[in-house]
Length: 285
Picture 1 (cartoon, helix red, strand yellow):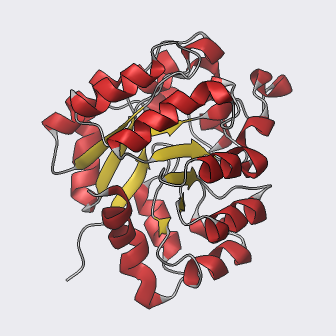
Picture 2 (tube, helix red, strand yellow):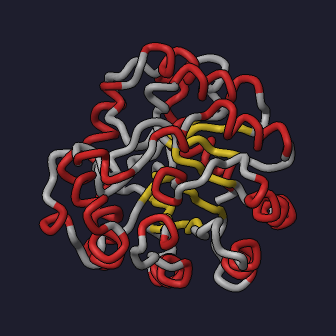
């Protein structure tokens, strides 16, 4: 019997993340996804109940883009507390650190050793940095030492979408080549996950994942019915052990993603790999 799916890309649908950390940028993002930000706000208990009712496990993501946005972070401590309270629903949490802060590598170590978080999430467009910037290399060295994966945003973003000038958000930070490819080459022992179908650079991200054994993909942020034929083709073949289910909740619901997944052209025999087996193996959850 199949295990419960693991949604590897879950943001807390709480005031702390959507309003306090997101501000105008996430208000734009929610409109981009056809939702109202204030009606999307839920308590931690409501969010956990939703995932439990659906029979889906989740990995929660922290958020620290204070330098890039001037907004309050959704702290590693906050995420660790939710995971501790609902361990059967949220099976792991990923830390976030602002790479512009001098103590970023130490914060990663604290998040893993003291708080029990299991990975590190970046959103380069919000944090305003290129992954191959050498200032980030001590952070990556610490991640290799701690044996945790790094999750990067790739491709376009709902963050600031539709606003004049995109609210100052620049998409160039999220291009896979050369930025993520450089990190994968310089840190071959670092597990790297490219989040989201990477439009308009989908072929670049597929190329990096095929070429670099330490690079993986999560399928969050888009309904599967909009996936490109090449993404489905590679998930069915060369990358069958390297792609993972993710929603980008609360922007996309697990119900919608899983429903659309069934008719998106993925091989039935790969269903369990994509929905939970690859995540268990890659993330160790």
